[in-house]
Length: 83
Image (tube, rainbow, N blue to C red):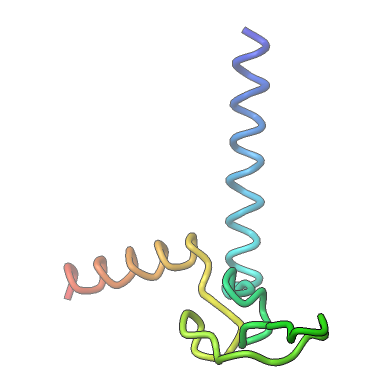
Protein backbone atom coordinates (compact mmCIF):
# COMPACT_ATOMS: atom_id res chain seq x y z
CA UNK A 1 0.00 0.00 0.00
CA UNK A 2 2.85 2.41 0.71
CA UNK A 3 4.26 1.90 -2.79
CA UNK A 4 0.93 2.97 -4.26
CA UNK A 5 0.79 6.07 -2.05
CA UNK A 6 4.37 6.99 -2.91
CA UNK A 7 3.72 6.63 -6.64
CA UNK A 8 0.51 8.67 -6.36
CA UNK A 9 2.31 11.39 -4.42
CA UNK A 10 5.11 11.56 -7.00
CA UNK A 11 2.65 11.78 -9.90
CA UNK A 12 0.71 14.52 -8.10
CA UNK A 13 3.94 16.42 -7.35
CA UNK A 14 5.07 16.16 -10.98
CA UNK A 15 1.68 17.34 -12.26
CA UNK A 16 1.55 20.32 -9.91
CA UNK A 17 5.13 21.37 -10.69
CA UNK A 18 4.52 21.17 -14.46
CA UNK A 19 1.31 23.19 -14.04
CA UNK A 20 3.23 25.83 -12.09
CA UNK A 21 5.89 25.90 -14.82
CA UNK A 22 3.25 26.40 -17.51
CA UNK A 23 1.64 29.23 -15.54
CA UNK A 24 4.92 30.98 -14.73
CA UNK A 25 6.55 30.53 -18.13
CA UNK A 26 4.13 29.50 -20.90
CA UNK A 27 6.86 29.54 -23.55
CA UNK A 28 9.88 27.23 -23.59
CA UNK A 29 12.90 27.03 -25.84
CA UNK A 30 12.37 25.57 -29.29
CA UNK A 31 13.58 21.98 -29.41
CA UNK A 32 14.84 22.18 -32.96
CA UNK A 33 17.05 25.27 -32.69
CA UNK A 34 17.53 25.07 -28.88
CA UNK A 35 16.32 28.65 -28.41
CA UNK A 36 18.69 30.36 -30.86
CA UNK A 37 16.05 31.07 -33.52
CA UNK A 38 18.26 29.68 -36.25
CA UNK A 39 20.07 26.46 -36.93
CA UNK A 40 23.74 26.39 -35.99
CA UNK A 41 26.05 25.00 -38.66
CA UNK A 42 29.74 24.36 -38.80
CA UNK A 43 32.00 25.11 -41.71
CA UNK A 44 34.70 22.77 -43.01
CA UNK A 45 37.21 24.02 -40.44
CA UNK A 46 34.82 23.24 -37.58
CA UNK A 47 33.92 26.81 -36.72
CA UNK A 48 30.29 27.50 -35.91
CA UNK A 49 28.28 29.85 -38.06
CA UNK A 50 24.69 30.95 -38.38
CA UNK A 51 22.49 28.73 -40.50
CA UNK A 52 18.95 29.08 -41.80
CA UNK A 53 16.12 30.60 -39.79
CA UNK A 54 14.20 28.03 -37.78
CA UNK A 55 10.90 27.18 -39.47
CA UNK A 56 9.40 25.59 -36.36
CA UNK A 57 9.54 28.66 -34.10
CA UNK A 58 9.63 31.33 -36.86
CA UNK A 59 12.99 32.75 -35.68
CA UNK A 60 11.78 33.60 -32.16
CA UNK A 61 13.50 30.71 -30.41
CA UNK A 62 10.40 30.11 -28.27
CA UNK A 63 7.54 27.62 -28.51
CA UNK A 64 4.38 27.29 -26.45
CA UNK A 65 4.54 24.46 -23.91
CA UNK A 66 2.29 21.43 -24.42
CA UNK A 67 0.46 21.96 -21.13
CA UNK A 68 -0.23 25.60 -21.92
CA UNK A 69 -1.45 24.66 -25.42
CA UNK A 70 -3.90 22.15 -23.91
CA UNK A 71 -5.10 24.75 -21.39
CA UNK A 72 -5.62 27.39 -24.09
CA UNK A 73 -7.55 24.91 -26.23
CA UNK A 74 -9.78 23.89 -23.28
CA UNK A 75 -10.55 27.53 -22.44
CA UNK A 76 -11.38 28.24 -26.09
CA UNK A 77 -13.76 25.26 -26.29
CA UNK A 78 -15.41 26.23 -22.99
CA UNK A 79 -15.98 29.83 -24.13
CA UNK A 80 -17.40 28.67 -27.45
CA UNK A 81 -19.82 26.32 -25.68
CA UNK A 82 -21.08 28.78 -23.06
CA UNK A 83 -21.66 31.84 -25.23
